[in-house]
Length: 374
Image (cartoon, rainbow, N blue to C red; front, side):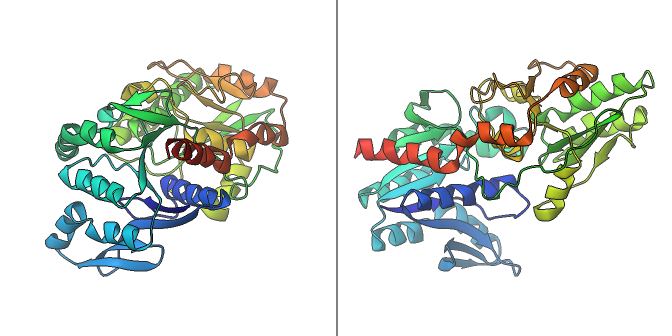
């Protein structure tokens, strides 16, 4: 089977989404699929291009016109699919349903290819907050149901059987065990605890709940110290306003450390110094109840106990998971300390429990669903 994995943006090596896409492509290859990665690229000189692997299939040049072409001109992708006899197209949604993406899917299907689209987070309307973002969402809302009906399936990490009128292929976010090292260092947590949260921090991550919990905890000058290492940028003004003033007003600068983006060996070293990981604590703010986040799986692959507030059936009953309620209450830091001190699973045991969640196993579910339709 020849496949084209299509995304509407480029890559950033420190970005979790970029890593995930490469893991998925690798997993498809491990499933004996001849897959090519089609993506949008902007060169250091501002040239805008469509790429398939390292091949330029369209160069729009620079300037405003080039930006417009990116959103409306997909003929090079269709020509490539026809020339290479692509059987299967896997599209990662950019929330960009429009007459142009409708036409893209229709023409891809005319080549004989099966076309599915992954919607990474559902629902997603609540994530759009600025005027410009809401304008783009309005266009998407006008056309997404038409788009869904054209597709041969919608890949989702939720429990939804139908999205926008299209039937779903339900999988979990996966793990590339070769790419994620297991924690090796056993830290002494008898006197202090180091928490780590890795994300480009958005309001649905709910890290402000943990920050407010630490403010309450340190109000009584406890002897036992807790540190929260935030690895990644605070993405916007709302996130900064919900976190930075609390740190400043409660003098938590020495306990809440903002590291910024990390990747590779630097990130691995930061994990080695940590004891417990922080997942999403605010998915309810986006109207999401069920989701299988990539971050939870990466934490488990590293051998970490962790917390989150959504429902994730792969981990909800695991003994190394400390669930918190999906509300606006500050996180109970003393409860978290007690949980960590009572934990007895080793990193090896935690990592092994997540083995069924490999990316290869998850992407095989998509292939099987498409083969069934064929």
